Length: 81
Image (tube, rainbow, N blue to C red; front, side, top):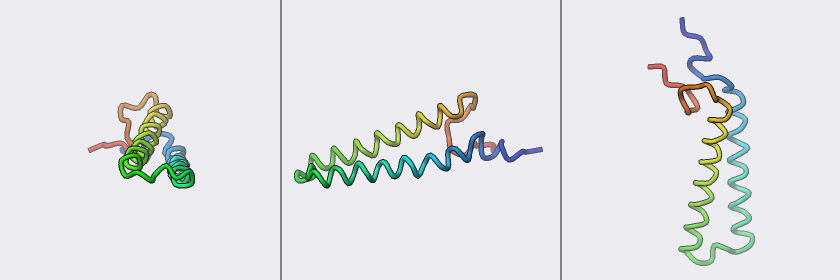
């Protein structure tokens, strides 16, 4: 019998609430880049926005793995197929 924890993974509610928090931090960082006018140069803007996105995605991945330390998967929804 398949339980709901096998499909959604353990601590699924924590992960669901963590994603909007990190997404909000991404938008705050984007606003700060625009506010301090660091995006005047196209190359600088590309580097800042790309590193902003990559940094928060890596942070989210580390937090997900820290929440599910015993899980064989590092995904949001476990693959049971």
